[in-house]
Length: 110
Length: 112
Image (cartoon, rainbow over the protein chains, first blue to last red):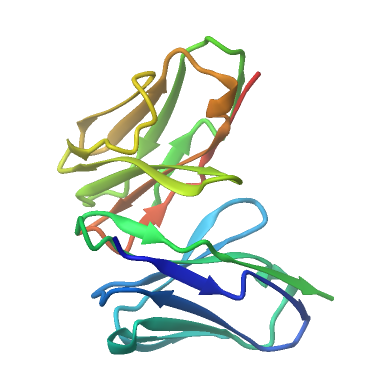
């Protein structure tokens, strides 16, 4: 089945810094989602981005499906950005399922 | 618009007891997913429904777990009898055509 990798696994940032999180996948995909799991455990949709670039405030995401990766950019990070960031792509064996990456754990310190 | 609603938010019970988790998906969504999250195994898909019909329950750990979706606005995940290793956060998610999926706030289950 499709393999999903995320890097880095852990990241510590000073408030105000910028960062780039990466999601690599082993097969071509036609859908990709980025989630933020906040310290309270809630899974929040960030982007649904099969291809191209989307922006939402300080966050933006770019998916290059042909090269099998997606990037999540966080600019001017805030402590509320702390948590775990997951990407999720459709399973190669079952269109109805999605496969989650292992996540990037982000800590933003004041 | 209301998101996916799960209840209860927290459940603490003794081993051997029956546990029922509830989920109300977003109106109009045709897919409903049940996930379990633990530190060791991350997010695992347990079962999913399409138009109220269970499609794939291969992620259900064992026969102690069962799930139903009697109508488009309600689903339950039941564990009977519960065991300490079932302790986890259980999420329900819904979607229109698989993605994007929208998650509820989860149920934090502790089995003593």
